[in-house]
Length: 457
Ligand code: 5AD
Ligand code: SF4
Image (cartoon, rainbow, N blue to C red; front, side):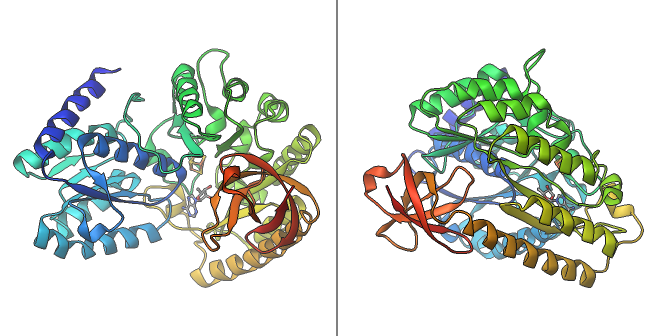
């Protein structure tokens, strides 16, 4: 373990001593992607090691953590709203407020927090997450405000405690940061350059998850398939090795970049029986012109060729994607090209976004920004198309037998179980609780927009 992490374990012990008779609680609010969720699990791990216990009700917590995202603008309004709301709670009961995550790497946000929300206790960025125990210690000791945002990307830290939210599915971050600089995206500025974890650290983490009963692993990275575990050890090698771990039954990964979807990765997906045959392949736009200005490094044709190649190599492969509408200079014709790709690929799921200007990115400085009204019209049109395709895709499941990893009782109906197919579809069915955590065969009998219903075999 690195010296920095050993030091943090000492702080965790010290905090534990200070708060041991006080029964202190924390609540955490996480925004954004699964990488942020995974960071939050590490934050929870550290806090619980110090003796804080987690509660849902923010208004009763002694410590409130906001883990922020800045990929799109609406998250900012949400954060400032929440931090505003908590002022009274702080005045009444001295709640400690900590804010971290991607948004804290943006200068204008930290400035605004300092000027308008001076009661925030701890501000820390994406590269100093592991130092939370030290910050909590300082606050408890001397109640002075702490700012710990650094610009240079941090090291890869191993050995932090982690408290996971689920006991069947687990996320494992394999690489941090991004080198791609897509012109709309803030991530490379707030998460820094690509750093991969050592393969031994990743594999050991997954082996211990399998021993604790986890069945499904999602490998995470901003650009997951550019994982670089050293000479001759790339993402495909990692897939083969994770596939060999006993106990793990399903492997997923997000988000890959089409440009890094090399033949070795395609073959690995085809050959590894545990790797789910649904690929999240972010398209962003179907127009080659827009893709060029987005700096995506592939054209519409190259994307469609890649999809075809995967279809040939991986039997029954399915796709999901991310699409942005209303990027600067997008014409009606460009937008039609996006719809065309959606019609051709028939995605299982499309995560749709309205372009949001991010300070510091090239997209923000471009002329020809698209009026909000047009962006919304395009978004609605895309949404309609996607929904009609999902309905069509769902029909194809009718009468088929699906392998479903059972996650638990259905939230809406205590008598039913719920789980997911290999392709990620939610399936609801009647079954015995003993099926939970197992893969069972379910014949699909009816379809609904967001789930399928079936009968266990
Ligand atoms: N505006 C809208 N959507 C964005 N995304 C990233 N940056 C922006 C932005 N500025 C979307 C992309 C990415 C997903 C995680 O968020 O589609 O794949
Ligand atoms: Fe952002 Fe592009 Fe990197 Fe994804 S690949 S994180 S969209 S810059």
